[in-house]
Image 1 (cartoon, rainbow, N blue to C red):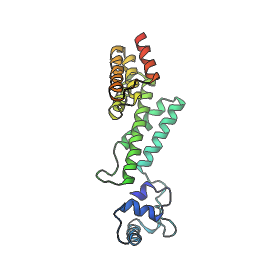
Image 2 (tube, rainbow, N blue to C red):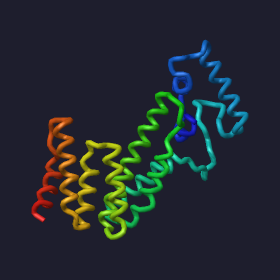
Image 3 (cartoon, one colour):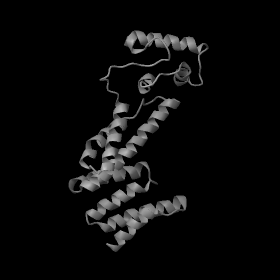
Image 4 (cartoon, one colour):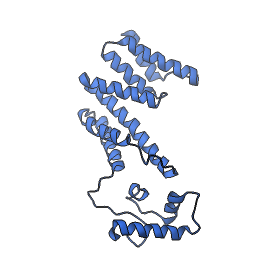
Length: 213
């Protein structure tokens, strides 16, 4: 799996040894790695792992790797956000979200595995942000998507203010300003009690607009 994740670059043998065994090295790591690579080459074919130079995995051009698909999809969604092409955000944001939510090598523990999991967690957050922003921009029936994304952001990252603002905005657009004010109070109390801090100026400004409304 490490070869698949890093298939776009050659890998030094020392890097592979560390990824496979970590601190629990075999007595002859170079020989052990050579045996594993030889065995893998027999399984996937000699053309997939060239025998010269650093180790790399060569896959057919049309190979689908879900981690790469998630990264590419969130990039497309965020690019559409910057262009304010809200309809174009919908599909790639959800591709990124649902792919990243599958997790990575459940039950396995290693430094590089945890690194990939952190990357996926970041993609999940970015996807929820895209879904919330596009849902608010499109309005109407997409407000429910923005609501779910806002709640998901709050659940995953309770100190991230954007999730609260999305939720406040949804309630405001639905004419439920009292509910929006309760969301703000929930955030304000959390930051005060846990961090001794106040909401950011952006969030406070939104709160003042709600009071004015």
